[in-house]
Length: 269
Image 1: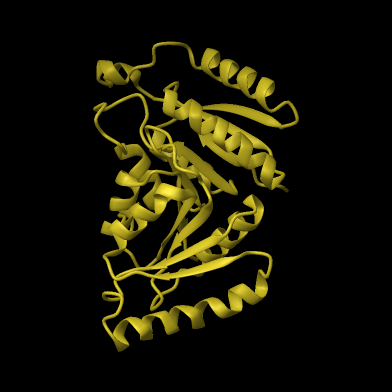
Image 2: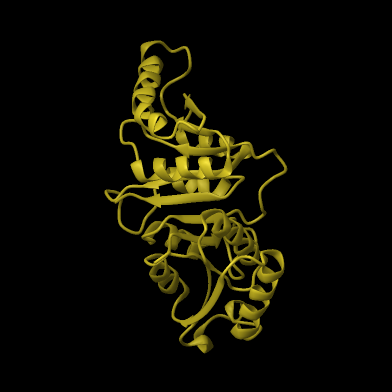
C-alpha cells in the first residue's frame, strides 16, 4: 500500500499554503495526498481565539476544491478526526510517508514564527515532518537542498531523505558540517573536512546523479544552517532517538524559528 503525504489544515493561511506544498510533493513522489483536520473533543473549553469560525466540512470541501483545480491529476482524501491536534497528527504520521504542517496555525501570537503544535509534532512524529515557514520562503533563488550533518554522529535517515529530495528536485545537495573550527585554523578544520568526505563517499557512489557540495563550516551549526537556508528549496535535519523524547535540540529550534525555507525533521530508526 502506498503511504500518503499527509498535511494538517486548520483554515489558517499557513496551513493552506502547506496543503498546496504537500500536493506538489505528493505528485513528485507519486503518492496520494491526505488532508487532515482535527476537531477538539470539548471545544467549549478552548480559549475564544482558538475556536473554529466555520464548520470543518466547509474547510475540507474548500481545500479539496482548490487542490482539484490546481492539481487535477492528484488523488486527494480528506479526513476530520475528533481529537487533540497534536495527538491526531502524531498518529497520522505513523501511516504517512511524509507529514506536512505550517510552522504556525491560526492560534497563538501572530509574532511567533513557529507554534507549539508544530514543535510538538516535529519532536514526536514517527515520519519525516516538513514545517513551512510562517511568512513563506524569501525571494532568493532556490538552487539546492541543504542537510545539516554532524560528521561524528551522522544521521543516516536524514542523509537518505536529503539525497532522494535532491534527486527528485534535480538540485545539488549541500551537506553542512558546522562547528569544525575556523577555516584556515590548521589541522582541526582540515581533519573535519576529511572526515566529512569519508562519510559522504559511499552516499555519492550510491547516488551518482546527485551533485554533492561538502561544506565544513567553522561557525556554530544553527547560524550556519539558517544562512544556508536562504538559497535552499528544502533544509533537512535528523532527529536522533538518543535525544530526549519529545524535545528538539537547540540547533533544530534555531533552524525552525529562523530558516527561510521549508524544514524537514527526519527521525532516525
